[in-house]
Structure formats: C-alpha cells, structure tokens
Image (cartoon, rainbow, N blue to C red):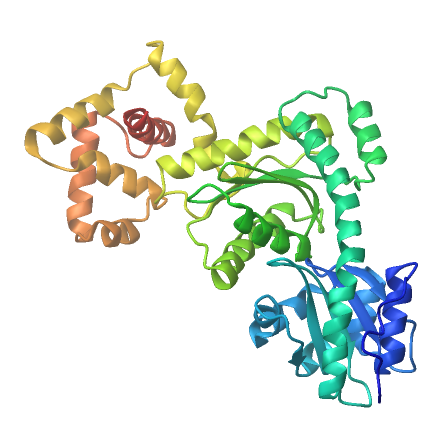
Length: 412
C-alpha cells in the first residue's frame, strides 16, 4: 500500500469524517477516544467488529472490564508513556480482538487515543507510521472538544460548590440547574469524600479524574477537589443496597489508585443517602464527620465508610458539647480511671475492648492477650469498683459511650 507523505493535510468537517478517512487508508475499523476512554468518534461499520468495540459504541465509553484488562496487560501504561503505536494482543475474556493503538499528545499530556482493530489483516510498519501521523493530525480537533468541555466544566464546578455550601435552597431551583447543565438526576444520592495524604496536584487530579470517569460501579453526577479532598455527588446503580454499593466502590477506588498510580493512604467517607437535593450540604457535612471520626478512632472504625454505619460516633460532637456544659458526669468512669491511675491497671481499656468485641469473652481475651479467667476477674473488679451492673445494657452502653467520649475529648 502506498500513502502520500501526509494524507491528513486536508480539512475534515468532523472527527467522524476523520475516523472514516483513517479507516479507508488502513482498511480496518477505527475508534477515537478521549483521555478517559469516552468515545468521541468511530468509523462506519464494517462486516465485522468485536464485542468490545460494539459495547463501546453502544454506551459511548469503553467498558470498565476492558479498561481493567488493558491496564493489567500493560497496554494503557505503554500508551501513556509512548508516542509510538502500541500493539495490543487479543483478550478473549472481555471480547477484545487484536488492535493497534496510538496516543494523541498535546505537549507532555495524552488527550486521547486512536484504536485500529486488526480484523483480517495485520498492520504493517508503514501502516503504523500512518497511524502516528493520524494522531498528530487529530490533536487540534480533540483540543477543540476539550475547550468546549472545560467552559461547561467551570459552570458545573461553581454549581456544585453552591450545593455543597447550601447556597441553593429550593428543590425546584436545583432541578432547573441540573436540567440546564444536562446533568442527569437520580432518585438517591450521597456525597463521597476521598482524603489524600497530600494536597492534590494537577497530575494527581488527572489520575483521579481518569478513575472516576472510567468507573461503572456507581453513577457519578458531579465532582470537585478541595486541597487534599476529592468530593463526589454519586448515585448507586442498585437503589435497594446503596450502602453496599458505595462501600465496594470506595474500596475499589483506593485499590486502583494504589495499583495504577502508587497513591496510598486514602481516607474515605460518605454522608447520608438522600432523595431530595436540598440535602446535599447535609450529606457533605456528614461525610466530613466520618473522616473526622476515622482520624480520632482509626482502629475502631477503619472499615466504616458511611455516616449511617457510624453508630454512636454520630453523636459525639453533640454529647461533647453537653458534657462541656457540665450537663453530665459518669461516676463509674471516674472511679475506674482513679483506680487505674493508682494501681497502674487497665480496667477502663479492658471494658472498652470487651464492648468493642460485643461482650465476647474469648475474642476480648485474645485482643488483650490475656487468659479468659483473667478477663472474668477484671470484669468482676470493674463491676465492684465502678458500682455498675454488667448485666444491665443501659449502664454498659452509658459507660462505653463515656469512655469513647473521654478519648475523643482528649484528642480535641
């Protein structure tokens, strides 16, 4: 096959026309994607196209299982570091036939990809060079799309901050803005916050954005960043088990950030799950409460992400305020603290861990590294010194909350 020096010099009315032109030259199906694997153009159908390409065209984005496989296989890391075309072997489990892909670069940033599906022929060295030229020629067209997208993005960001800070107070006004900005509405939503160890740089923001745009575990309505926080407005796909869905998404996000971009130590929390948009500010504040409690009680609530799952920790700020006003004291706790101080014992800690383990003697003994008989003796001393009935759930709960509260107060 002979090609002109640059067959992409002419003007193309659209990226679709451009994709068709590459397809004619290479005699194979072509798809063009943005940096987050959203489909922006594809060549007209041939007799054959593989399931991965069909699914991409139908949903206007590459299926998440395909993206995950391409990361594992090393194709995407290669595309993010090379300006040359990359040959991608077939991955039959996800319906992906063999391909050649090339990245579209703007300076040092990948802004998109061109994929050529090798149906009944293998691309030659000459074809590869042609694909490389196509990537250079596509740059300006893809950039125009980005510029339009960025202008809209700025308006959307401003709108999201108004929601997070309670500056839109009527459901009607919020829904009108959703419609105007073409943001999908949902029956249920929650605010999710990911907190990174360091402030988010532009590079890290790109990586986060990439993961959020390619996930299909939840539906992402809005997102923004604030110093070291990533803030999302998300809706579950399964409205019957939203907690489970958000928990799975949070764990998966942290795993992928670590595996793909070597970013670990991410703390996560999400607020209450609501139906009315005027509750967005409330859900955001609740997500921040979860993060605050995780910081204060890392061991006890490390595996809790949702505000609804915080249990008694939800009330700590309120209770602390009451306590500071001198509204209540717990004499049982004061006696136990005094005894521990005097005798260098651990009765308060023993009771706390006993309750942490749902009053299970064997598990508590294991956690404290003591014999169950030693634990039984300590519990007897707790009942005597604190003058509390360990068979009375109300007294036990009160003591447990006050122990936690004392710890919380010491950290303030």
